[in-house]
Length: 301
Image 1 (cartoon, rainbow, N blue to C red):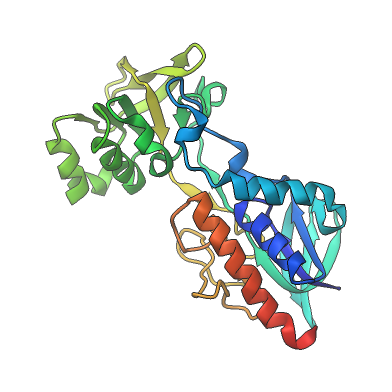
Image 2: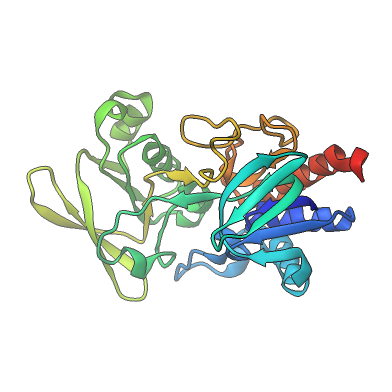
């Protein structure tokens, strides 16, 4: 039986694993990859690497260490986590069952795709999913935000403060009456295309154009130096959602110590209800979760 199993190899999971190793815990990281969302970096023709604060120095250091510490990692997706006598069982995709006294879930979120031509070709090359992370790179640029809900409104509002022009594609329903949508309608550098849909992304090395379809079926093409798909994120909490409490969106509810509703189960990063969706926040939450797990385990060590 392990002292601690950590599920998810993104910034939160990597940080938690290295903290647990340094606390001399018998720890195992179970993940399908190392690095999580940090493996995907937005490329723009006018941006140099040094201009972006990514938190990659810490993440890459932990990632490099774990690539050598093979005893501390198992590269396989997890399907379910169940509670057993004296601990928890982690069920992997290949049918394995690994038992631990405690668990940290750091499985992050999954982007919602539009599934239209050009989307996967240009992903992270002028086309991305997080204005929260990348808006400061688009000062005086022409941008497009795609989405029909609150997240798209917030992203467009953030870009409106720095970009030369923002086109918001697709808002509909109740959000049209929100204060934020009224603010966007009133902004001189924002166009709101209610009920439109993005149907194709075009460009050469980078995404440069977005083809949109109006409610009447006609199409037009928008020029864009940066395009953001803001359809929302789905927490990867399905493997434990019937064991711990989650919010309406599926984020795992945690307290200030990264503890869930079940003693011995902790969570960190974007899969939780902490919010922020930033690498540096996930790193800090991963460290907190590992320290909380260590404190939980201390009487049994």
